[in-house]
Length: 566
Image (cartoon, rainbow, N blue to C red; front, top):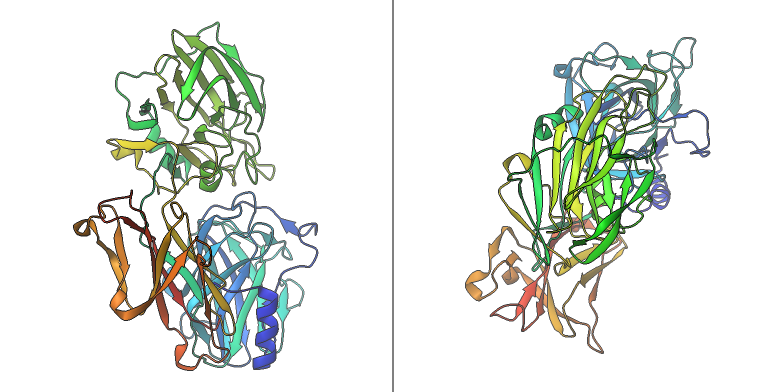
C-alpha cells in the first residue's frame, strides 16, 4: 500500500510537476460541523463528475471513514466506476449499472480518524474530458461532507453542489446513494477524500507487501461469524442453538444437543435498563472456562458477556467488529449487536440460575433506533446465553432475532468466542453448516513473516520473522517464484506446514535470535526502478525446532513484495 500521504504528495509534485492530490479533505476534521456521520450500509456509492484537463493516471485515494462503523484495522474494498464512452455525467445514471465500467478496485484498511489509503494495483487512466465517477465502499462506511442541498453536479453556480479544482483536475461534487446502482434515494453528501495521480498515461504498479498461505503451527481458541444485515442474522440464527463443550484446555464448538430456550421465570432478576452499558452478576457456584474460573459475569447491553469488566471496546461497545472480538482484553462470549433496553417498548436483559445453569436472556430487547429523527421501528429480539457451572459448557440459544434494522449504522451481528488478549484470526465459521470445531487455549501464533514499509523507490524494506519458538536459527528465502496454493510438507515430516516459495528461484539468508544474528533482513529498493517496476519478490522463513515435528522445523506464511511507484 501507499506510504505516508503527505510525503508521497510532495514527491509526486516535485517529480511530475502535478498538483496531486486533488482533495476535498478539511483541515479541521473532526470538529468541522460540516462533517456528518451517516452510517450508510456497505455498498454505498459516492457520485461526482471529474474533469481532466490533460491525461492523468489515477494511482490511489485517501478516504475518510466513519471510525465508529469502520474502526481501525477493519479491511474492505473501494471500487472506482467510470461512466462509459460518450457519457459525461453521473446524473441520471445512478441506478443504471450498465452505463458504468469498473475501472479499479483497491483494498483499504481503516486508519480510524486519519485518512485511510486506497491503492489501485494497475492505475486508472483518464483522458482529457469529463466523466462520471462512482466510488463504491464495500464492507466500509464512509464519512461525508454536507453538500449544498442539491444533487446537481458542482459548478459554483446557484443550485449546484460544491466543486474542487487544481491545474489538472476539477471535481464536481454530486450525490450519495446508500446502496449503489439502485433506485434508492439520493442525498447531496460530498465525498471526503483525496485523489492521487500522475500526469500522463504512465506505467504504474502498486507497491505492497501482502501475506499469503499459512505458517505452522497455529493454535486456535476463537471462533466468529459476522452477519452484515439483520435479515442474514435472522435467517441463520432463528431457532438455532450452539454449544461450547468444555474440554479442560478449550472447547469443542458443536451444534447444541438437547438444549432448549428457557423462558425467564417471574423471579428472574431484570438488569437495569441501559444503552451501551455493563452490569455484573454474581454466580452461586464458580464457573470454569478455558484458562480460568470466575464467580462473576459482566453483561454488556450489546450482546456479550465477559469474565471481567469489558466496557472498553474500540471504537464503541455498540459496534460489532472482528478485531474487537479477537483482541478483547478479557475472555468473552459474543452475540454482539447494538441493543438498547432504554428504548420505549423494549424488554430487559434478565438473569437467573436454574439448577447448574446461569442464564442471561435478552428478553424482547429492541435494536438501536433509527437515526436522524426517523421513527424507530419495532424490532425486538429474544435469545440467551446458558453457562453451566457444573460442566463449564456454554450454550447460545437464539429464539427470535429481528430481521428489521433501519438504524442506518449498527445493524450488524457478530457471534463468537475468544479468550482474553490478542488472538489469531481463524477466519469465519459457518454456523449453519457447523459440525465440530476444536478450540484450544492458550492460543499460539504461527511463525509469521511480514515486511514494512512498502517497496517504493528509495525505501529500505525490513523483512521480519516473528513468533519463533525458542532460541535458535532459521533461514529466510527471497525468491522469484511463489507456490500457490502451498505445497504440503507432510511428506518431509512437517504435517500441517506448506511451502509457499520456490527456493530454486531465490537465495537464503540466515536469521536467528542468538547473539550476532537478527530476525530482520533489510532489502533496499533503488531510487530509480526501471525494469524493476512491478517486479514481485516472494519470501518465506523456516525455523529450526526439534520438538515441532519429525523434520524438526516449522515454516512461516508466504510474503509477496511488489515493487511499485505508489
